[in-house]
Image (cartoon, rainbow over all chains, first blue to last red; front, side, top):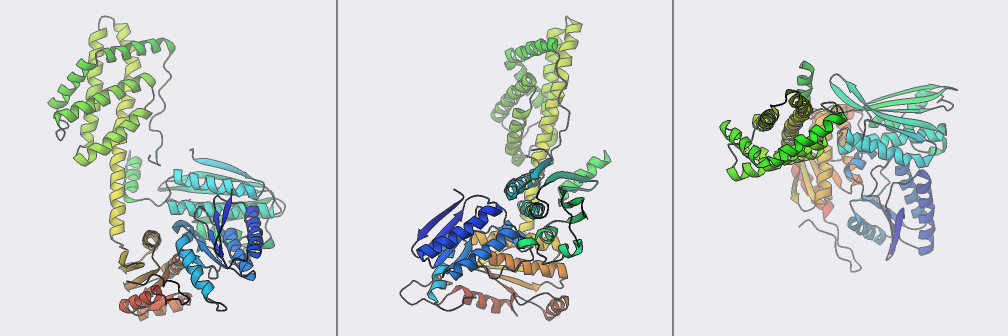
Length: 124
Length: 148
Length: 301
């Protein structure tokens, strides 16, 4: 299984297990969009700890997933970005500001708790 | 693992082995974890560039040796239509067809040296290199080796 | 394994079939006379005053292992097991203070002891003796080199680790409170150091689960564009790992430099002094208690 997707209360947790091809990344986006819609999840965690490499396409796609999720009423937090990967990501000429991030699953869930409490407020 | 790896690129599925082999070779050559990640990421960018612009090509990664340092050189070649207006393509923020990644500028920032040769009708060759920083101990060993 | 390893010697020339049976005979002889030859070797080691830091029991145990590995290597022509043993041995004896000349010394003594024994055993037949030595010598020399090089490489690995430890000590990342790290930077900040700093800081964020890092550059006199960019990237990378970064101690000189260089400071939180930075950090960590009965998040206590 490439991506394990679990439900936890109001949230969906997607753990990427292996390096994905571009096609698989796009499939993931569509799949998550579907599931959020069906489950009315209010938050989405994407765990990328298993990814040794996050290139500009994957980074943009994560952003794209977050936008899609928000359109369906869910906030997204990316967790598990490794130090090396973080260093590589900041070399892209890509605005990563919109991506919400947290260190790990626990932190991500806490962040989602805070974000989803503030209904109608745009957390920066 | 030897000091060279060759990955044919025919679809986006080939980016996965290209990244993995790039990382493995970099580590075998003694690059730090971080540098290995940067190299693998750059390889991913140019491999995607091949898929998007030319459809197919090849990536060859090998050790490169100079008198006082060594590194990893990656040569990505394709027989595609060539990149028109190479300057534009290398400009920061340039996105090409379908916004599929930032390709070349991203790879350039990740590596130490970066060159593109492109010719309409003949294809494109990207050559990029990362040098291994040597520590004091290695510099001493190198000096000794050269004196002998 | 040393990543710089290039084969030091070509693989040994293929031993022609007729000499293969000689090799077997030689190996059999070395095994049959193991006890005597080993004792002679220990005597020579003691005479040469090598391995002084080791006890007789230790020496006996190590020479037995070396002898057996030596003969195995002669037999198989493969030095891999010997290399692994040599590295293991080196790891154990280097902290004891055993030196390179001692390790090389004892291996060469073993080579000599065995060669002499072969002379004595086969002296009745000069031609046979020559062929036996033809089989023995290249293999024995290769073994000596293998053990020597393994030892030296192990020493170099230790030195490298010590270098790394010293480098880390000179750029300490301090945990002052739960989830809060301070990185005080003092002195000249150049590109390689800035890179190393970033790696260390991100590693510390991960290890300490930090939510805020205060990067204090009070002790930095000047800064150029490359380093300024490194700083900005460090702040961004920290955020990707869930930590906010606050830059403190920005002198007006450096602030002006950054402005002149066109560095985008809008994403960076800067506070005048370290004290102010710490207060800001604590504010960031201690979230307001959330109503609706939820537990407040970890406060900075």
